[in-house]
Length: 514
Image (cartoon, rainbow, N blue to C red; front, top):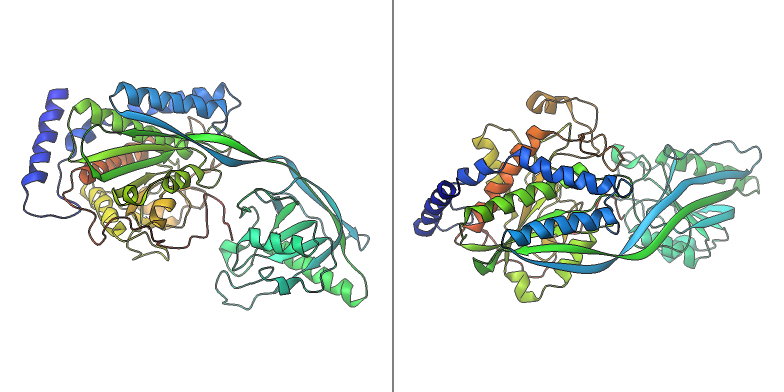
């Protein structure tokens, strides 16, 4: 089997070496590698990840024993396969909510509204811990927003002037243009001891709760609130003010925010041009709430199996290949950001492309490819990312699988690479968004429920997988990796990473930062 794979891949390399066309996607026969990569073998790695979680509190969060065992497992297999393995440690901000938030109205009495956790309020990630009682006062909010206003219209809390004359204890601000931490900082400087941020309310995507994170640990309690509940509270404050009275409430959050340590596992090939490195990345950690077998055991295990089969083939690709399993992605893409921040300018330029694999086995799967050329979404990758998109789309076309584009919105580990101009792309089978009826027609599954109903939940376990999607996504991973590992030039349209930001995302991981 190894000899057959070696012969086929060597033939493909000769085509790449002596072909007359020089481009980012030199046609490469990847069939031999793909034939050795299958869902059954990937599943064995996923079962190991599940076992590590089950023995350690049902989680593989980036600072837990479940994560450490996962990292040891990956590193050990990659070392045995002949890769040069390093372990890169870094600090990150850990956050956990220990109890649901409480928001109780005191005056007027009886208080006209009840605010329920999960429906009207949630604790913002990196909220401080504590209880604050006092006057609630709004800061430059607009309720209701004019119809048709785009997302990010409100500037509530973004400027010191928004808090001119602020005498309250709890600041009520509206989501909008600036970062959440800036709103919190301005409120605290004005004397607030707690902050409530309510959703903007001008689109379906900006109505609910549990939408954001404060970027880093805060000293005061911070709540998120739905747009409807926020509008109710604003109207109550205005009504009471007109009558010469104030609204008072008690806010309670129960959280842990502290600095911890995690690591990236990095495995380099011992061959190939080191001035044209192909990076394949997947995050290895889960959220604290569950074992993270789809998110992102699926991408981690698929990447691992492709790497092992590539090593087993004995073929030396034209370009160096670097596989990275990132830690603390769920804490805000920390591991990948740290990795890129430690690169020299020359090392940035030496990365030809970054391929990202985050959630590739969602049970109600979609087949999504990152929209590198921004032809279908509002956000874009760095120059050359459109070539990566084409390689994946063309592969799926060749097997008769319809794909859809997904945006570079800052929700996965490609973010730090795109931000320094490195071409990037990748695959995704969907998270918390609902599958549409037209997607059921092309992919199957169930309309009106999430692509992954167990996203960031305890039920994201070994039973939370679509093995058909996993098998096809792993084949696409192998195809894309080998294609770029054998390319004779940098990705078309770019001089490789140049250290300049490519876009300004609104997410750092799964939560918005503004």
